[in-house]
Image (tube, rainbow, N blue to C red; front, side):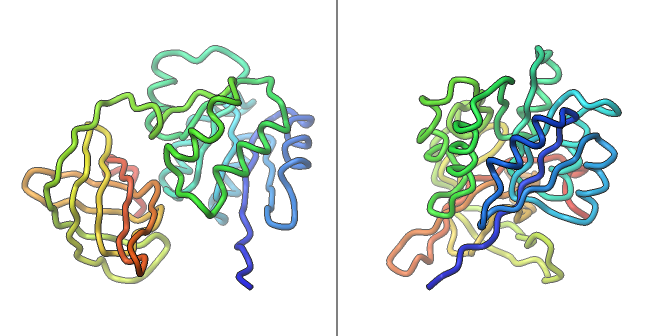
Length: 244
């Protein structure tokens, strides 16, 4: 029998009750929860550990949660980042959150709904994409979806082929050259189909003459009789946010 991998969650919030409540309801035999009370503690943790998800408060006593958000996206592109806030978010803040996080949740919230939300996003049966979001978005009103299911940028349906280099996350393996069909594309990302096995966190270096960009795989799923066809969602990122 296949044993599911242990999931890891980082909760960053300066309120003890919030940290304790989220840790208590999310921690179980399949999920580990680490907490941090301020930005410095969070930065120290992410230097040595990677997480499947981070629940991150915007307002921290020593620094902005948005700086931590950017650092996590830089060192661990596959991490699902959920921003928490109990105050208004400015236009500039929202733009930054949209560029780096998956969704924004407003305090206060129902802990049982948060648990259902986390369980769906971390489940292994579906990729992190709009199907997951749609499964719970109509039931949880305090969530603002920032990517995939509610697109800020219109995507165009295309069927062009591209070549690119793929770099596996946290691996010393050399980059692999792959070809892919581009299913749709927008200003911020695209969806591709390839025979190469891509996973969330893979870095793609797009050297095609029409696409001189870098991208991070945000979700992937496999299909076909032998599960040999990979469909993946990519987010374009500037060079400074790529792992070195």
